[in-house]
Image (tube, rainbow, N blue to C red):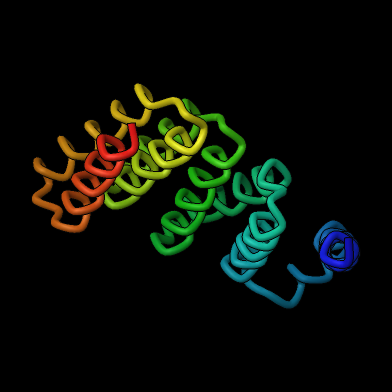
Length: 166
């Protein structure tokens, strides 16, 4: 009970902070003093905070804006952070098709491998073992093509764990 109360208080505090930051963004207080890239970083930080309190759906609009700024400014760091968080958000809200589309659109092997692995893990925990196997296999094939050792390790580990527990 105490944990739930503390968690709710933390969520309320974060929500108040989000409201104040959003109000500042809407009134252009932040953008007058910060560059567009700093504004994108602010949106990414907001999205990250929503992710921490498991409110991933609320992160999506902020990430859309950050990615748009990253594209306009051709800023790779913003694009990578934005796409990675977007794919994770969609995975966490169980919109796997959208998570996969975001990762593939970004075209970054590491991100695609992370998303495939995350989708596999989430589905294993739900007991959807066929989906788990499919995504670990997709990750394994991509990791082999890219000669990505971390991806190979994660894929083999995931498949081994799946076969061990089913």
